[in-house]
Image 1 (cartoon, one colour):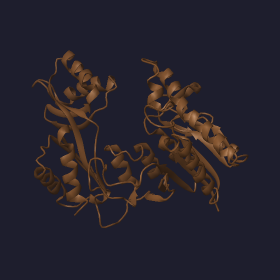
Image 2 (cartoon, one colour):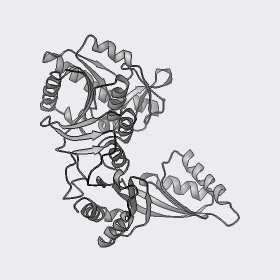
Image 3 (cartoon, one colour):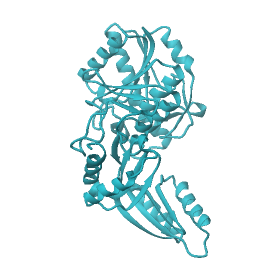
Length: 396
């Protein structure tokens, strides 16, 4: 029998009594395979459900960041206490822990903190007495013990951080989906199931908009060398295995993904300006406004970049105040193909461009890395772009 598994249950796995009963059933089955379980839970349900994160967030119009963290952390705490109670009712010894009681220390940044350290002895002490430690995900304590949350999808990150700190034998993520797919099935009708993938491809898909796990969770999987299995909550069956290394297989593109809506900015500097000084000024002004930028393309004293759509007015105001010439275009989305296996292969960009041309989609900007090729397109073209890229690289 293996010693320890870290098991994460998303909010929809705990939404109602039937879902929670199924979750308890899965835990009892896992205890036939493992000595102990650390269960990481998200807030119950989705928007509209009383304890979901979005529902809690809507209770206060303009909370201070520190207040918002305290409020949002309540959803996961409620889930942990409720699940621990359900387990005990079925004869499984369990104790609920907040993130900070579980020894999770963060950098203290409100609403988007990062885990800095896990004091493993706190959970190990609980596991000496109980079969299951039920940990509230998405949260920890910053300097001075202040409560912080670690951003959307943070329970995935919590689970992987605990797996690394406790050297768990297995990491299991329960999802209310039939499988992990090569594309969002709501966007691409012929999306296919992915039975096995690398953590690097998982990370890239997550960063490029796929809603599988939080990108930071995939990064921890890569760093720690931990394998992840994704299981369907309805059946308990493994639907996808995620390996910490790049897989060698016949398919070098794993999937296609698209980002949330963004706005593209084009800025131009005056001839007397040095290019480095001009861009240092612009990028510092935007960074100081806490705006995330992406898709940088620089040529001489001209540059393109994107920002989230809801920050368009903020960035426009910054540039106007600084007297910088600019134009903007949007809403746009970034469509991407992802696959660490494409590194060094010839002709991939040509096929990518040809696919978008066939779909009648104009590329406004492109960027690439060793594992991705992305194009910025008009948001109205998202569906056609994803369908054609999927047809070209996945359905070949």
